[in-house]
Length: 175
Ligand code: QAP
Ligand code: CO
Image 1: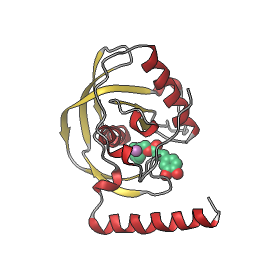
Image 2: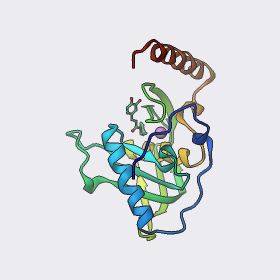
Image 3: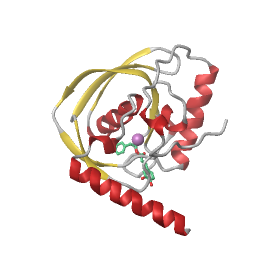
Image 4: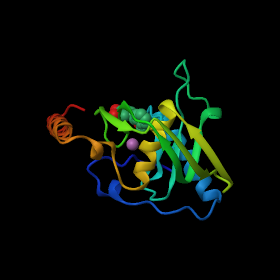
């Protein structure tokens, strides 16, 4: 199974992903391939829609203090539902689907969710810090929302400008 990252401004990123109903080998194969893709791309989180599977599944692996992302720290979150949020925090976010752009986004400081693991077992999770932010960022993907959609008018304009500049550089034959 080979996956590709869907990048802005692809319309597929605006789709609302659908609930996962079968926790079978196909799902496990997708989750395994997503983990490889995420690590190869130096990501810390990835939603299935970002690899063109419009299902409510996401993975996270928050780097430890040495910047390592061991498989034990991988989280696979299926059909997440928010139970509780508290506080506000701002963090400079990025996204594999919006390469090379980073901007401050406001999120809840803490979040509690329920979700299912790859076997369909119900779990709950209380998160703070970067994990809380990452969960909110990835859950937005399930509803077709990108972090750039949450920017103020002026910061969104800054994004549009930088995006156009990057496109021009690409045409000229840079990256
Ligand atoms: C979402 O983002 C996130 O532009 C995960 O050139 C971001 O993994 C959660 C990446 C911030 C919490 C805080 C972005 C890699 C990776 C790029 C990512 C790039 C290469 C983004
Ligand atoms: Co993202």
